[in-house]
Image (cartoon, rainbow, N blue to C red):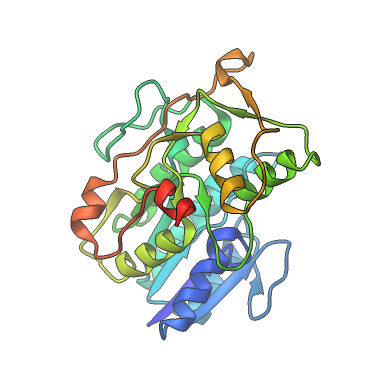
Amino acid sequence: MKLLVTGGSGFLGSELVRQASDGGWEVAATYRSRPVEGAVPLDVTDADAVEALVARVRPDVVVHTAYVLSGPALWQITADGAAAVARACERHGARLVHLSSDLVFDGRRGGYTEADPPRPVIVYGEAKAAAERLVTAACPGTLVVRTSLLLDSSLGFGPQEARPLAAARGKLDMGFFSDELRSPVSVRDLAAALLEVGPRRDLAGPLHLAGADTIDRHELARLVCLRHGVDPAPLRAAFAADLPELRPLDCSLDSSRAAALLSTRLRGIREVLVA
């Protein structure tokens, strides 16, 4: 099968490309600003370029991971770019798996299921929630995968590991929220799950693929340091509730539906980091 990964130079995209290639998929990937071997440049806000690429590659499955977290291009890339990918997939009959976020929720109670309506309270969450609506409208068979903080790539550290290690070593002045709860997941587990759901056109709409543990960011940072043999004592706890801007405090996801559907096991992050 042919797989197209947008954002193939990113933390998830690169792991997905690696696993798919090892698993016998014919893989194409794109990048925006950081070139990687074998990937092609693509600006997802250029609808004509997206259309031309999908028409040329003719993928069976597209996994759309490309996004930006902040900045002036946030909405254009994260929401409008996702819509351009969805329109091209619908036009050429490709199966679309769109990556979304736990931050589409307001964080008031946690344990969110696929039945809970998005209620974002930060700009990035608003863009991701808009992207969900846009891709579903443009390509009704889209599988919208919501996930959380990503760690544990075989290809190197992502920000969820790099920042705690830098802070513990005195190279970064940063506090880690002890009152913000998430469902971190091994990026290896997530990539494997995405390759499992990719060909399954019977699955559409939202699906939560996150880790089995609910954990605060400070504890997560401590576990990262312990995993890599770095003393976590210098890590400073902070409180999101003290910030002037509203942040979602508990965006933990219930991934029990995925656990019943898939053979891939989405491990709790304590198991991942202690193993």
